[in-house]
Amino acid sequence: MTLSEFSYYFRKIGPFALAGLILFIIFYVLISGIITAIVNRPRDIPYEPPLGILDPIPFSYTVDYPSSFTLTMENIEGRPTTATSAANVYFIPQARTRFGYQQTTTYMARAVGFDTETQQYTINGLEAQYDDGIRKLKIDITNFNFTFETDLQQIDEIFSTATIPQENTIREQARAFMRQMNKYDENFAQGKDNVIYLRYDIATQDFIVVQNPQEANVVEVDFFQPDVNGYPVMSPKYFNSQNYVTFVFRPDGNLVIKAQVTSFPKDYSTGGAYPLKTGDRAFEELLNRKGIIVSPAKGSSHIVIRDMFVGYYDPEVYFPYLMPVYVFLGDNGFAAYVSAVDPTYIKTATESAPITPTKGPREALIIMWHSLHFAQSTLQELVYLQSDPHF
Image (cartoon, rainbow, N blue to C red; front, top):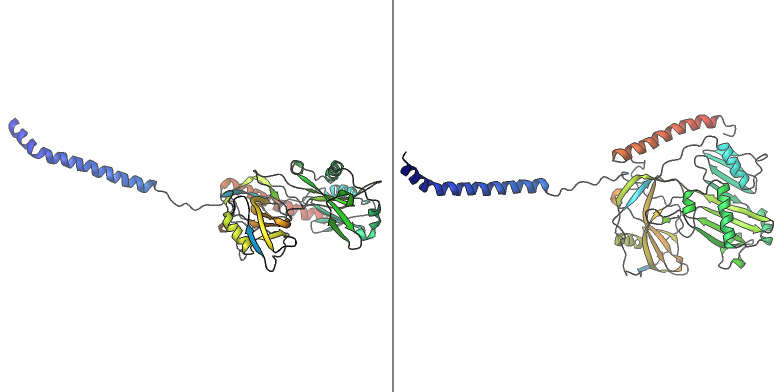
């Protein structure tokens, strides 16, 4: 083929070849773009909660809804608020039996006035009990939580000489008692305490809250847990704590007549974020009687909510999770809770309620360790208790 012939055919075929090359490049770019879009498109990945599906909170104190009531929201925003879309849930490990508990329970019994030389304890399950006919002390031998109460009918003469010291003295005496019971831990030291003045009415055998200390003959000091990640920790009754000391102060010294500590150490290294209900949904549940009223509005069927926020519910009985709740506060002392975790991640009433292992490998190993450790300690505990003459 001569040069002139090649030039002739190139001029004839060249435009078609160039057009084909351009079409090929365009086609390649389009196909590549489509494949990239398909590969990189957002995919709905199911959320795996870090502690699995949770048991519903066992609220230990609740007040019945009024037979008829109205509820309005009059907070700063003028509507229900959603503080956050998610919050952490933390694991509360089960305590194991403390070996050598006899020495600790004896020391605690002496701190509330028992003569442990003559008064022996009895074992009921995992609870050591002292009872001298006037005073009763119950101590959980796994974690040394305790409840102490006095039959005031038998010693009502103590109120005739009751005095009320300065508030600083009251707080320090309460902390000293908690230290005697070995219960004034870091949490209570970092948290708040609240002094409540009471008057015991001998005729009605009831305590009445009074505002003027001069009218009081009894003082209660409530201890509250510190905030968790900036969220307040709520007690089962909101205004009162399940951890308290009640005194009668007299010229010859103070007398503890009631006390209780039911506190469970939390494992803040185990847990993770859970989606929460919106504030609108939580308020709707409160309207539909699905909340928990812990303090009724005194003397009113019309409840005005002035504030709502998220806090953590501190269980009074053992429960494996520290979980968030919506808190509603209103006029006339009204307070109510609504569980805050999205119901998708809460077991229904018909479902079984074992502790669900975590989905993540680290959390699963931690909870597995807790479970194995608790099983081992339970076996040791049975062997140990059988050797106890009180068992």
